[in-house]
Image (cartoon, rainbow, N blue to C red; front, side, top):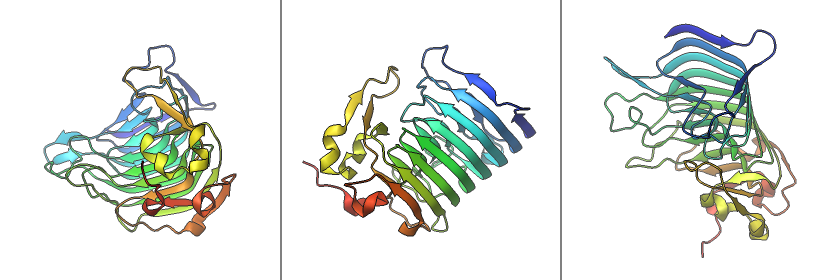
Length: 280
């Protein structure tokens, strides 16, 4: 598909996913598309499995192909499941994500791992030259999450990444699989902002980064969807979680705001692998 768009003419388009059971669905799946725009959507999620907008791969004669040359902007998503969220990119090249907001979940997830993106696949599709600007998460897991499962990916340039009471503003993580995967060291994370809250959606694997003084504030909540794991609700952990096996272009000075973090290391600006509390 080439030269396609979904654009609001005036007010944002309302997308209502709340009238159906919270099952395995999404609003939009983008595969082998070139030169596209998606702009001006208010998506009302229902704790659905899968992100509202997903980028996948298509098998072609020349290998696995992914989206290339696109703009996704002015998207608001509400009531997202913690393990999913607004947008997930399994593969894609030269795509701008701008002014994306999510209540719950992960706002922008750069996470590969499906067939066609793995190192062992023939001519796997890659994630490269991703630009993210003004990505916001409220009472979710993270605004930006990066996890290159099973493959070495290219670059991302993420700036103005914001958390309002979420677990993190940015989670930079290693992948899993036979080959854990990396993102390029030329990837950039700058201008990060985070405000502490106690209604964040947390993953159990991150409890070790939560200060002991706040551990009793975590509660388990039924997800309401048998296909989605229960959610842990609790305190914000840090503006940035840099818990990967690769380096990116980031310095703690790029955290411009970490407000309300009374117990966290580095004033709530940054946690790394070395900051994990010993597990009992």
